[in-house]
Length: 241
Figure 1 (cartoon, helix red, strand yellow):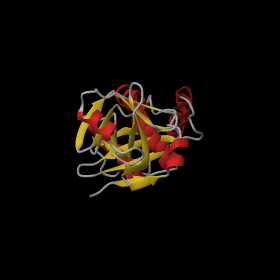
Figure 2 (cartoon, helix red, strand yellow):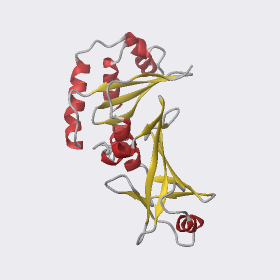
Figure 3 (cartoon, one colour):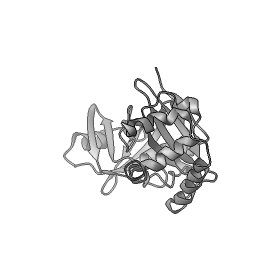
């Protein structure tokens, strides 16, 4: 069985692409027939350009200097990996085609084509839209937020499943937090041979990490008054031995 998705409104493609770029720690680079992986070596400009620290004696550095100016000559690839271990852990991939401009210090990469791959398929993001977009305000803290929720508050995750349609929980073996952005929280519902994702939207966007606590509290309050679906009996049975 394939994935099943139940998405409520979330970030647009340009914002999602900028969030992947902002949160990514590693970067795959292909240029001049060479492919290299860099970890912790890039930063992002306000307009979506990428500054990449490259050793001057590397093949990539030479390829960047010799490439025709203004022509697409390199591809940068970024992966969005779920911080909580789950099946199919890659949530999205971002590919930037463009060219390197020599600069003092890091090489400056200017994208000319932006493609975002998600479970729903590939989206070509307009360059002006990409440059104007800003990362989700929770992107930098998302990994910590989700791992803390999964590790320290499994009881809260169980309570949140009361907001999920009972049929979506049928045959579930595990429920874990998969993603969070300013618009809502996404839960991964795992089954023996398949999985599905369910989105719990916030009543209002969380435009800062400090607002997330209130948004989560509201969801948990809603969950507390919701009827516990029978599909969750597997969780209690596991604990009863």
